[in-house]
Amino acid sequence: MTYVITEACIQAAMCASVCPVDCIYDAGDHFIINPEECIDCGLCNPECPVDAIYPDYQLPEEMENYKTKAAEFDYSGMEPAF
Image (cartoon, rainbow, N blue to C red; front, side, top):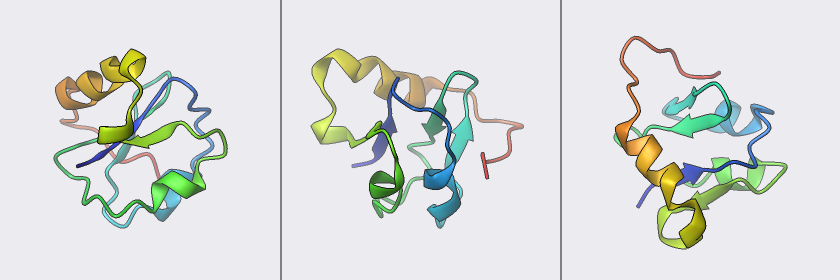
């Protein structure tokens, strides 16, 4: 399991500031969680002020594209969001 950030993200950065492994990146239009780095701790989820973060198994079907985007995103050469 990993966590997925969806379209409601307002990039408030509270989620990134609590991430113990710095796996949250700025994808331009919203933050994105690198599924290869996420340790599934869940600390980011309650920090999101707009409920844009879901465990991958609870991701609404119409938002599955955000899971795919996170898996296929090129994180090379990027620094975490916070």
